Amino acid sequence: ALWNQHPTLRALIRMTTSQKYRYPTADCDEAERDKVKQIEAKTRETEANIVEKLFMPPQPRKTKQAKTKSPMRTGIRVSARQREKQERFRRVEEERNAAALQAEHLKLKKVLRSMQKNVMLFNPEQHQRKPPKGSIDLLLS
Image 1 (cartoon, rainbow, N blue to C red):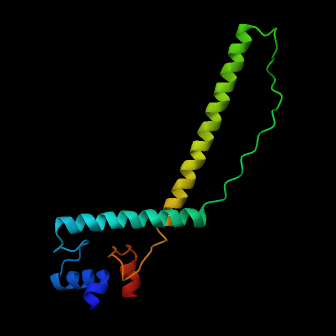
Image 2 (image 1 turned 45 degrees about the vertical axis):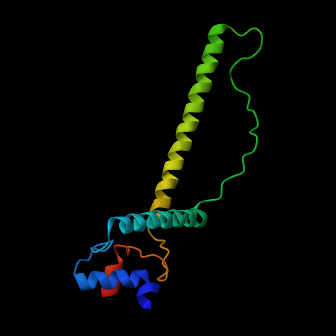
Image 3 (image 1 turned 90 degrees about the vertical axis):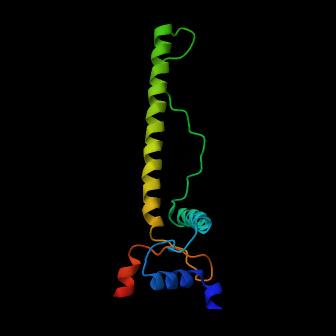
C-alpha cells in the first residue's frame, strides 16, 4: 500500500536496497526517467511562480510622464544640423533608459533565482523529488 501511495518513499527504498544513491533511481528505465524530469521541470516552474509572487516587489503603475522642457530648440526655424543633434540626443537617452531597465531586470531575476532555492514544494504522496543538497546535513544532525 505504501509502495504505491508514496513515490518518494519507493525511490528511497530502491536507493537503499541497490546501494546506489542516484536520482532518478538506478533501476529506472528511460521512459520513467524522462517522465520524472518533466514533472520536476513543471514543479520548478510552479516554485518559480510562487517565489515571484512572494518576493517580487510590486510593479509601479505606469503613468504618463510629464514632458519636461528640453534644452533643445523646436519650431520652424530649427536647422537640419540641430534636428540631427536632437535626434542623436533622444536615441542616446532611450538607450541609457533601456540599459538601466535591463540591468534592473537582470538583478531582480538573480535575486529571485537565489530565493527559489529556499522554496521547495514537497508532498510525499505526489511524484518523487530529488532532495535539496543541504538536506543530508539536516537529516544527519
